Length: 133
Image (cartoon, rainbow, N blue to C red):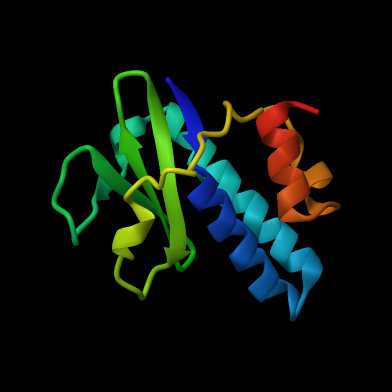
């Protein structure tokens, strides 16, 4: 089973990076790398996450990384990361409804080394992970 990240999830990662970067760009890059790794790790045990309390749907689950929630949908073919957001908030309904312009990113490249990710922005790291460049 493979992990794909929605455009919505990638936008949320960029917002998180922008927020943390105001204090420390290096720390922001490391944290985004941790979030990406946590999402990608779902390939080993896709059902490890709990059901999202706001929804109660078995197919939509979440895992936690620090204070952040990574919400994903299980299908027969893949794990779709729908959104990432600060864990003290309720799930924004718009974050789980695919938009017409929402696109699925290709499978991430799990072999990318963390040290490489720390040296680039989240957007660049996501591009590298998604496209394998």
